[in-house]
Amino acid sequence: MERDYSGLFFAFLGGAMVGATVAYLTAPASGAETRDQLRKLARAQRDRLGRVPEALSDAKDAFAEALSGATAGNGHA
Image (cartoon, rainbow, N blue to C red; front, side, top):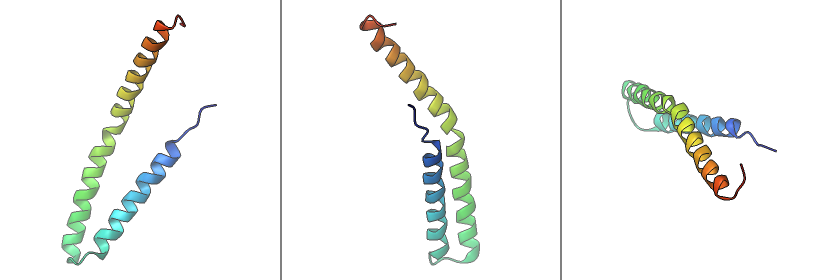
């Protein structure tokens, strides 16, 4: 039975983003500086998240290739 951990992954990401936001909001900086920092952080996270599907696809392909090579050596097809 396969387990789907995508919900856990997104919950972790959401928690990390909330934690970062709280840290920035409680830091001793002016409102304008804090908002600017939050905008930069949001852009950086959006860029990083944009690369996740490609990285997951690459990992899936590498795993499938490794699995195929491992099963080919065992006489299983």
